[in-house]
Image (cartoon, rainbow, N blue to C red; front, side, top):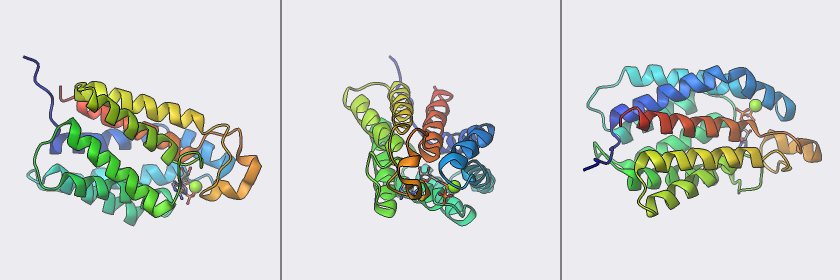
Length: 217
Ligand code: ADP
Ligand code: MG
């Protein structure tokens, strides 16, 4: 019998440290994307934020449930990142954490609901919809991809690969878009032809989640 891998507090810690590693490795690239259509700080914001999250989580009690860890991570992002991405990702992780509640383990369905709650938080705070050239263009398709895979009863690792691929496709689809939210919207038509930095880091964070769950299997 194939046992379905479950997600626990270790998965969350791994997800956050994988995210820190990948946004740090891609810091220059993210900053370069933000220099084209923003103020050139996105890589630095994300690196600072996720490095702080990794430190904050290292100081937590081992018995803290996954949802609580995500709430700590979200609060840390809000308090350490000045740019738009701090409150947006901070809200996303806090909402995901609240959705998971206090259970110690969960499976693909709960994870899909948590990611959906994260997206709802981002949309409530930033009022962006798909097509506005923001992180929502990567997170929205990731949530849809995860939901479809879960409905098709795919194993969690496969479902997360689908989510990460959908995020990357959404990220690439931001290139021809004109920005309607955030700093890039000030550029109007000049924002066309550039990939959105926030959609790019979102795709990296989804790949980090895929890797964190795969490392448990
Ligand atoms: P800032 O724009 O304050 O410098 P960052 O550079 O860290 O913050 O983040 C920029 C990214 O934030 C954008 O590429 C976009 O994806 C995302 N973003 C900005 N405004 C919004 C919004 N209202 N809703 C969703 N995402 C947004
Ligand atoms: Mg910026």
